[in-house]
Image 1 (cartoon, helix red, strand yellow):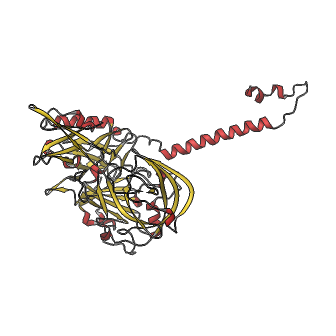
Image 2 (cartoon, helix red, strand yellow):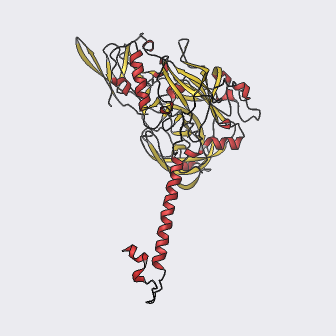
Image 3 (cartoon, one colour):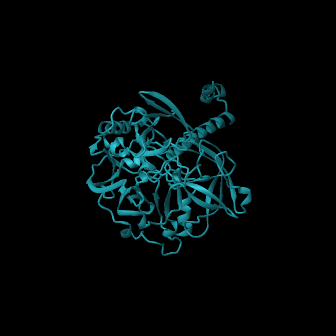
Length: 503
């Protein structure tokens, strides 16, 4: 998520040209103009519904959770991220924490920072305990370093009670905290394999399930679709339901896709369509490296070959002519006169996922209202939009651009991710997302799984251990006294193999 600090609007008409300077607080921007106006920027089988699985309850029978109490416990939008209020330490210190299904560490600012309004003061918490271990995490953009510890946390609009969790205290960071954000930490909701410095650091949700006994499932609704990412008014809302599914947050049926490997929420994409046109790519192209569901990524990110095919198809189908490549590259905004909707010029985009019945698939459809996103207005006369899709070098990411159209269920207990149309994915009475199925599914979209980063660490440590062992043996051979051979052929120090190797 790239923060754009300033935008230069060049209004070029046949009669003249004038320049506006705009301050924005948003993340990833792109642009194109519909009227010769350009804004330049720097650089399955149908699955059971929730009630069929027994998870769609207004409250958990154990009394640990009341799902209705968790509704609207998120604030934010796709550009600045969705965050939740959490209370940390004793006495409690209240911070806003970003919800991220693409990482596994719970980390909070523990030192002052220009872009952070408050931070967790470890010295003021009587229950904070340091582990003495350093930790560092690098994201697609930004990184931080700090120390590991544990402390008590509670969630005002979450499960009842207080639990003890691993906390990474962020002491230094670069490009992680950004201007305009209203959160001071990150809540990684992925699997232990992604935890840093190693998978022994139990993630937040694992601790929550173990200590409260709630079901190993959470669900997410993000309601920022159609909200300008530069809006200064009250941010959009959303809900993180921990322990189950809240049926008032979706409509229609839930469709599930298997989680292929438990590190990210890795799924299998079978094909993409622009309008009703199949891109006709080898389905392995969609899963190059991996395909994941990640609330912490702003855009729909596609492997380069897939992205180019999508852009080509949109360009051919769009009712607009003479598209600027800068719009798709993220360097220009599209601006229309207020009252003129841009969405009628663009086609819908559909993603096919393998269903739990692996011979079948279902389709997620994002209407233009999801991926042609409002960014700002200009002088009260123009509305400007960005392209909510970008090219990726590390796999396909179903980010907030798509997730805002759906109620997404992370059913970890059954290794699956569910999708249903969100009740807040609506604009002027028109739904911005669709879901349909079943469709026949081909096999073979996933070959051999790529080596995961934690596995690469294991291999690296194993090789280092082997090298250390070899060096130790050599050192022993050098230090242990060697017996001279007599002239009958006994090996001496002067002719030993080790000595000649050292030479």
